[in-house]
Image (tube, rainbow, N blue to C red; front, side, top):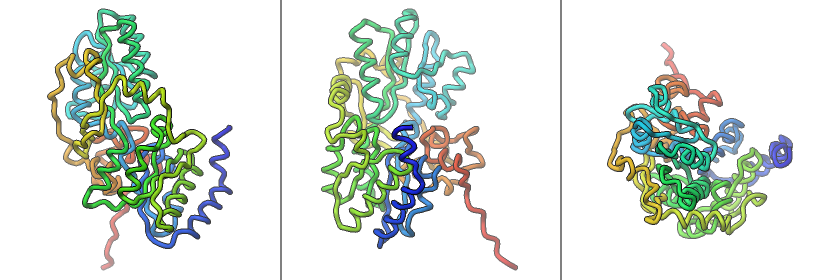
Length: 370
């Protein structure tokens, strides 16, 4: 398949890895900021093929995982109300809140539906004028343009019974928060190719210059990631700190201007709470005042809900890259894909799900000889 098979060529992967082993002379810690990249790295065992001392940290790149617990509780509360059709992408339905999940609401008779586009939700609202239709608008900059277009479409075509529960987050402030953390060990980043396809990568250039860290925009196939790691290590070894674009077949420096215009029209930048991490200033999107009528938090009066994480879940540390799933006492026992305690075990992009799906288990304790 074009643009797929050629990025999984084992012979070329071996040559790139040989070059990486030749280039690396010092230990370096690199973080990928995309759940899709994490799954490829773990599933293909790329992190286990790197030179000794090159360590991959799996960052907060899963949009489902970083959606805060309180926001899931708000979704559950809204979906349980009579007269509501609550819509979402499928991977949000099993994310646990403090009082249950959306699948549980559906099992109890709530009208919870999986859609493939926010415009599907707008069409549902038009077809059901006596019902309130809510779309759970989560994600990074990647999904923001489509959600913005849905709001614009509802506003211009007169669909007053449509609203969105917004939980959008932005990548650059998260990278900055990681670099500002006192326990930060990251020396280079792999930036998410799909986010940069929308936003470009000019936002990363001041970060690379200020913190002296290389940032390489990378795709999602095995060769994309191996080459991205090689480009990052080469910069580190040469003392450079630049933004480079490995994913040139899909990403331009300026990004997609039409998509950016839709985001600017519908949303404003706001503080946002990240699950397990806390509030990061100017790290999210909220509906602009012009579109406040489509804000589900206001419409259903759930803006003040708060919640606490399950005490056994270390999702926050995993999302910050300070712990691995196998460091969690609940991983693979109390917390599995069938019985998740936290979002990273549910989402298709979650680090815990990636480790579990790849068969990585916590190491067995070493017994002392007697």
